[in-house]
Length: 174
Image (cartoon, rainbow, N blue to C red; front, side, top):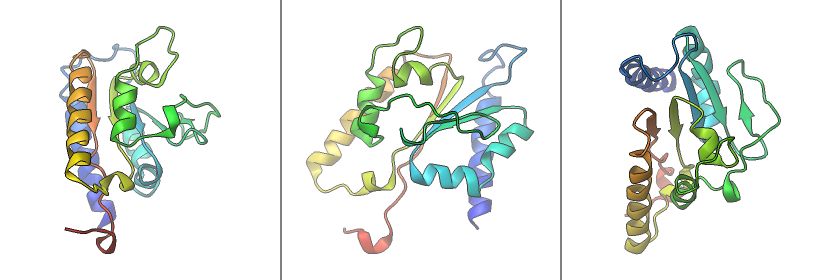
């Protein structure tokens, strides 16, 4: 079942990437995908064989996990570098901070590094699903609306925000 779900997700991303009008990447280079994640994202990549599937389709799939893990290239090699994700925070407030960084060339911060890729997929880890109050929920809405506004500044990029993974049922309250 897990594999089928990963394949469905993968195909959705592939179709989205394929619909980019062919103008996003240079003709002599594959479309470059970066997936920014923490723990469950690595499980998706490894258990779902996502890197191999994208490679087989001719895409360059990169990923960046925790700062301590850093960047992994399309061959699956850990490069020993990280993009210094502020506070190693990929919760909604962390993404808000990242998407409001100034863009620099050469890249000097997380957003600037992410923008070196054609497709930018990002997700928070499952603890962000533990919304404790209406105020926290409103904050999350505000963060994501700001992120959307930032994303709108880069129409030549495809951004794929992943839904925050759910908590296990016994850790969830109404």
